[in-house]
Image (cartoon, rainbow, N blue to C red; front, side, top):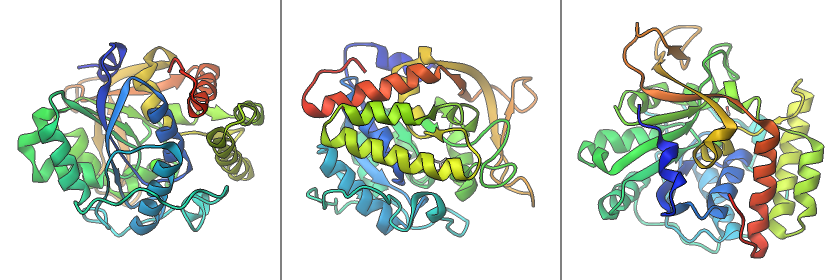
Length: 324
Ligand code: BDR
Ligand code: CA
């Protein structure tokens, strides 16, 4: 199975599309993506998930304004492929990004839809493009269904979603996959290289007060906002019994940049799309019973190394060159 992270170990920046539903942890994933010289962000596309599409799109434009991301931004599909939408206002708040004040959008919204913009980026790119999907995979699935001819321009997909061992929204399913299981099935069944960061790893990527205090102490505007987002996330998760804040979405970027921080295992991941109790479950199989390996799954992380990476990345935003 092709290891997507190898692409990021060279000197040439890898073209990427950021597709997500920001969301505190999506936003921090994008902070990391913009800070790294190894990524060339060609487009930002939004999906419905943590909040409605209008809200995640507004948040994406505010985040891109804050971070200086000048790639085109396009709105995705309003609804999952077959299911009714689910939102996560209980975690991310009514805005989808409650907490610190953010600048109003100073970057335009493309006239193209997310699928049209992704297709354009793929057509125009000389190099194959990596898609980093940190929300429900509705847009990515729609792209694959609408433009099968462009699959050859996609190097692979780095996904935050699922959990081999368990779920967080139901006993069996993680939020991003539960929101749109048919889309996830299209992605994992696409034949493209997939790197998956599910709850197995993201719930070990815990951030504690000493981490966000260190990030805040970097002292620039972005570091202070990231610290506030992390503190917001930490407080919510402490209330429901977590030891720290599980910083899910940045794992989908960090595992490409710094694979040595992660324990990874190739397996076949099948998506349960039926069932009263298990819809949205990601079933991992290493025995070959379900088929050939279709994903490299991150299962564990060097927590300290991950926290250090975030603390380094925010230094980029006062003009420092950072080795991320
Ligand atoms: C995922 O769900 C969302 O709330 C987060 O942004 C993350 O992508 C974790 O289950
Ligand atoms: Ca997300």
